[in-house]
Length: 149
Ligand code: SF4
Ligand code: SF4
Image (cartoon, rainbow, N blue to C red; front, top):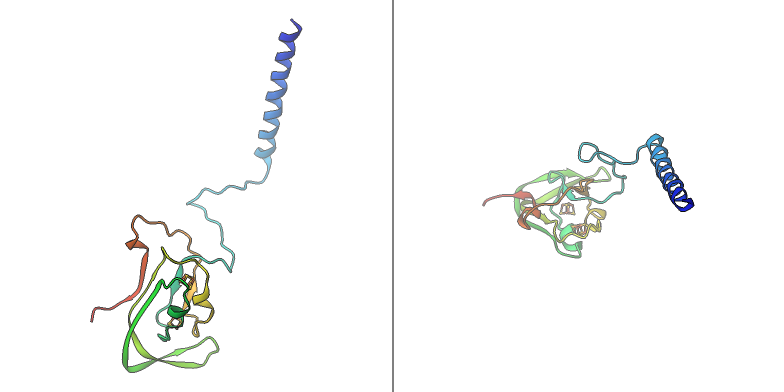
């Protein structure tokens, strides 16, 4: 008989203990988000998908050569009339070659950010975009410039 009632008391205490945790979190500040309707704001230095403003690019090939996994491809041809681009220090630079192909294979990118650190014009950058999953490897190649010659 004693064992019967003590089991009931222990059961009730367990329920109360569990409910105390539920009540505590019910009234505390919410820490979850309803993704994808809500998203975290990424820190300024977050390294997401590599992006490029091709209008600012002077086709210097720095990013291509520095990339440790060679996932950036840039092809160019001599420009008849060089375009003028303002670099990060506000000085004017000439784009002597027109870009015919400029792409990055994100499936190989290690998000090191090296390509962005020495870009003289700030054309290439690490975006805050982290939603880069896709179904095929081909879709992971982002073409910034593709010109049919
Ligand atoms: S380093 Fe910058 S300017 Fe040079 S090719 Fe790459 S994106 Fe263009
Ligand atoms: S972040 Fe690193 S691995 Fe990715 S493209 Fe730039 S240099 Fe290459």
